Image (cartoon, rainbow, N blue to C red; front, side):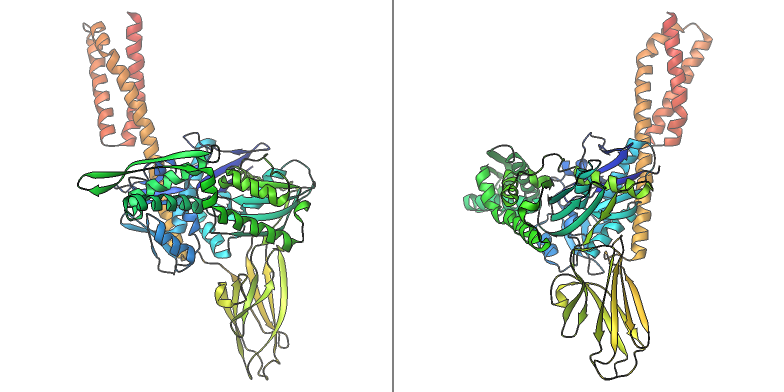
Length: 607
């Protein structure tokens, strides 16, 4: 069966999994880690770095190292999360040509889907190295509360990375798939997902017949571990300013060191009651005088700093339960997803809300990728009986007179679905009507996301209110929205498939995909050259060690002298190939070097 990978494209870390046999398995990267930091950097030499290697150099290259790009994906330039990122990120956030967001790294501007594609491509490479074969298809997860533009931007990132994203599924839903996989259980569960950048709560029914039905979902796409880190950073910055009268936020390198220290302190305080934050030489005070930062952070202090963040998640959970018509006691299991759920205060508040301890049976960092791989295999396997029924996380409607939004498909409607509503014209002799398709919960149209628009023309002339127009919304299993409008008397109709925008044009996406493929080819060649170089240099070292002894053995032999001359020649050619980075020449010399090594060993063995 064709391989389909499941990718959890996370804010802080990303993870890739595959189903081998009947077992979902997380694939480790070359360092043996099962998660990879969602970080991208460009070095002074123009080299791209992704993952752990990008994270290791972030302090010394803060301005050209991107983290938490997921928080910006699919967002408009003037949206509050982008404004916040502009003010706090050490890297340069700038406006793109389509009211989108770009990030300046060295001398080039990158779109957010492009940055995300680099991380997805790394997941692809990790899998191909593990399997020893190419992979082209993937199921990629997104926060349940992502809107259509954010989902489309994630699809575009997959396309740029050289992946056919056959399905986008919600992270809490993926976690529930892992939790219920193969268990044949009937359960009403809540998935509490607090990751690095986003928060989701989903209520699901898991059936013994392998039906996974999402009842309700809600969340906040700008609430997560990054905000907890920021609270610690603010605490450190304020304390340092009080002591030294110096603002650390004005120094990019200091800012990145604070970020790393905050993240480490937060993790430490999940297992211990206090931690020391020590940042020597954090900033120069002039006259060759360096200042140091050293503070003790206690768990209670962290909990006080972040109390409102945790409370926001609990409030969203309570509202979601109420809207779904459930009491907390109805929930039979609570599944914790995301690194922030390791925080004892989070676990405590969740347990208090639901009146029971959360389930400990799933790995918070791996469960989402595993669920995505399960869904991918089910989509390919015609014999699979697994059925996933998800919901639309946001209300869909159209703009009506007065600038209001009229709901057609309510939030948390099971997809696929279709709904119709009849509207009337608002002016005498009106022959056309403009349909603006909106997504969001606000009554004001301007506060919602505009997904698309079209014009229904050819209406019969009549007094206002006398022409009835039926508007129909339809969402398929892939979340594609189509909207149709029809004059009920004449049958005149018009429709569109609403294609959400990532902020990129088709030409831009195609060009980025080509560049991404070129990078992959160059990287593979570079890796192949490096492996050949190491192999060649190891053989040359062996020959160097044996050379004098072999020379003594064959000194009186004309044949031996000729063999030594050939050995010197092939070693020189191999070294030249290494110096010139000529992979083909290097490949041509390796077999000859190996034969020479065999010959040397044979000579020495006869002695």
